[in-house]
Amino acid sequence: MSALKPRILVIDDEPQMHRFLGPALGAAGFEPLRADTGAEGLRQIAAGAPDAVVLDLGLPDMDGKDLLRAARVFYEGPVLVLSAREREAEKIAALDLGADDYVQKPFGVGELLARLRVALRHRLERSGAGPLVKAGDLEIDLVRRLVSRGGEPVRLTPKEYELLARLVQGDGKVLTHRQLLVAIWGPAHVEDLPYLRVLVGQLRQKLEAEPASPSLILTEPGVGYRFMR
Image (cartoon, rainbow, N blue to C red; front, side):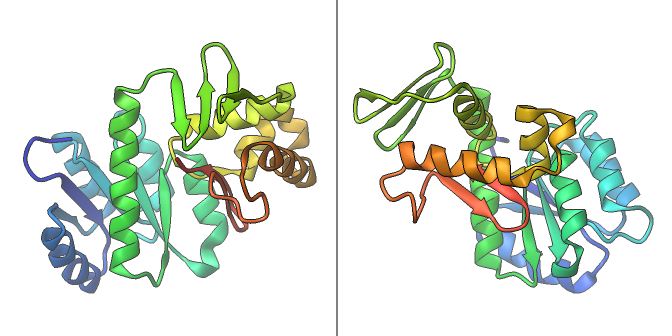
């Protein structure tokens, strides 16, 4: 993150979106940058490496997913996708391509700013993060593959640990059902969502104080899961 105000590039072809977000970002302590097309957005990312990007998928000159794919070749900063409710498949595809999070249109500026702060914080933490992750009374040692809760060891099956490790390493990012199914069971099981739901349930029973109201492993309906510290 820059030493001055974090620079947030908004790539959207709707002038009213820039009129809405520009002042809101400025008031929240960010420096807003504007791009009205995908080509201009890519040029600004390559030229100045903004601290984060807010990307609308519906651009006039290219698909937002194509822009994301191209940007991820050289850009490692957070990317938040703006998505319309009826475009859930595109939202999932964007997460698979490397988006850090998404905000559903229509949205409140408070929600966008909160998600932006979380994405920036997680990216900063990851840049200097060690192998020991703490979340409340839960400790996860990613090097020794040990998990404890309240100082007591937690016994996990290999698949339970693999799921937990992948979620933790996501740094608060949504991991899609497809990403998790392929990573844990392989490409042949990409449609076996019940496997994943059962495994998530088992993990919550062992790690969450209130498994029915989880605070660590959160469900993003229709999309996937994320781990929140």
